View 1 (cartoon, rainbow, N blue to C red):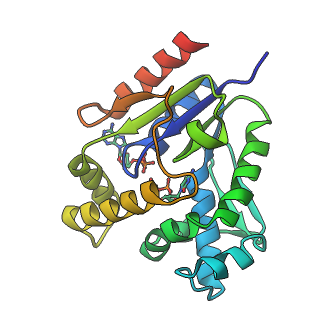
View 2 (cartoon, protein in one colour):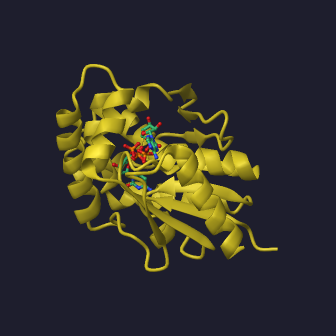
Length: 218
Ligand SMILES: Nc1ncnc2c1ncn2[C@@H]1O[C@H](COP(=O)(O)OP(=O)(O)O)[C@@H](O)[C@H]1O
Ligand SMILES: Nc1ccn([C@H]2C[C@H](O)[C@@H](COP(=O)(O)OP(=O)(O)O)O2)c(=O)n1
């Protein structure tokens, strides 16, 4: 039997992580947060004083950090060189630098290979920016989540302290532009993905809709 791969792409705050984990739990599947992998590499670059605005400097060290990522939707976790960094990768500093680091082809080549190896292990829900288009183009279920910039900013600012909805809206717009205009594997909706606008939906409704799609396509 071919593996069930559910590809969940979309911009920040569209609900990828929450919906992907919910779908993985409901179906007893593994869950892979590819954004956490880009964040972990970014954290390592900052930690090692690499100039993240210099693609050649990032490329030269892209293979150095050892990365592990858990695929249990109830216990996601990421380590770099043996250190658990799940909290560190969510800081403002990492979020501001991650688009530049993830635009470097050597970083992507490395992480895409690691992601494919994990996906080859069997049924899984995978979230990111290029899962349906590049990492797993043969996935039987591809969802592209969107939401209005206001809804996305409201959701993200509710999670964080010391920020405002407007500051989040601006930061997300900057990251959207960088992620969707980079040369290597930009954020795009795969031709055969189903777009799901979550602006007016609650999380349970989003999960139900993805589960319906999985049923329909498998
Ligand atoms: N449909 C939804 N309605 C309201 N809030 C949501 C919805 N989906 C996600 N959220 C909340 O929005 C925030 C960002 O969601 P998240 O899943 O982290 O998005 P992404 O992974 O796309 O950045 C979280 O606090 C989450 O609980
Ligand atoms: N498959 C992926 C996943 C993430 N990225 C990059 C681009 C994103 O801005 C960062 C962070 O992704 P992440 O999913 O953690 O971002 P959000 O939690 O949605 O804010 O990583 C990528 O280039 N390709």
